[in-house]
Length: 459
Ligand SMILES: *Cc1c(COP(=O)(O)O)cnc(C)c1O
Image (cartoon, rainbow, N blue to C red; front, side, top):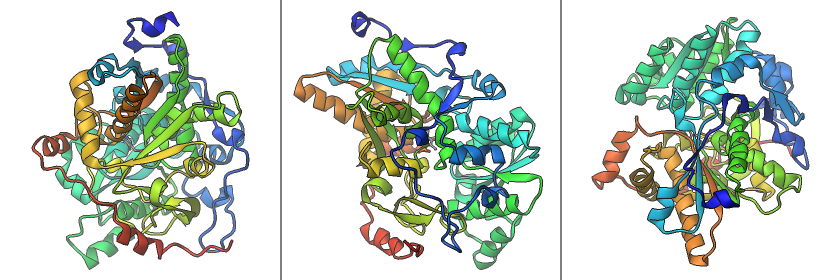
């Protein structure tokens, strides 16, 4: 207990502490996750259905029920460049808030791409390489995922083609330049490189693009070329699995600090950084080792899939090309407002996160954009790091929980995931600082409309 009052601000581990196994929460679920369905037949799909898009190594992880899966040495060798990531005790923030809470954050912004996304990009590229894949196609919005994958492809000698939503391509050049620096080929989507892109451009030559269109292009690219597979940066089980290195390290670091997390918090777009931090702790709740720990996923009020969506089968993408997955969804045709936290603008949520939410093992909160930036600026002014707008949502709830501790007069250990830095999002900070940032109301009419277009699934 002595070290709780000690002076450590950063808990660092050595490279030998990088986890050697990923934690697969599927092994500890009380009932198996609902099957993924073929959109045509409504029947559960098998590994062969996914084989055109993903290497078998990843498909096996997607459905694995084994609790611990070995992290290949080649993957750990790359993770070493930034892992273990530091765990900080936010002493200056605690002081600024005057809270008895002990606030810890796991900082994933130390990766070269500046977020948690390289943790899975590296693993995904490795399994593709293993199976002789020469090229990977993907989509990216603002470029966080595209830049992580571009770097990973470069490390393993694979080509990388990124379809980047055209408005971002034009308005946010820096991440495109990062991707190109790491050797990726980046095109503005809709592009003339695919039939899907050409079709959109014929109808609207000035189309600004969308994530849905970019996904269609990347999937078509992968499906029509023998040397190419497709890759996704969140939502899927194997992506969440790869991110568990975050929570596994954090557990070790808290042990070293002689403390134990009581509340674990992460922002949730597709759910991967939240799950990566929280699942190793939620696993203890599932197995009865720790019954009281709370895990909170934080989403924006403008795109609140967990807190306002329906738990039903829906398409994973906007266009309706993917298999059907059971998740909390706002409807695949729902287009969220142009939030600055681009990584939180997904209509659904990772099926594993949804199942745990449905069964009340985890909680969810939605917060408005302005309140999130208020919290982020407060954080930056006490801790120094300028958070990604996505992470800002988590910080809002951290501060709210710390205030509750102040009111109750009892300090709790709060752990959150600082999923990335905001160095390429300074225009959003400028909007906030000049009073121009606005909140978007929960678009209930738009969600109701989108929910009318859910696919029909036989029960
Ligand atoms: C992409 C991204 C997110 C949202 O994605 P999840 O899969 O929900 O983690 C959050 N934070 C940052 C910094 C991101 O780049």
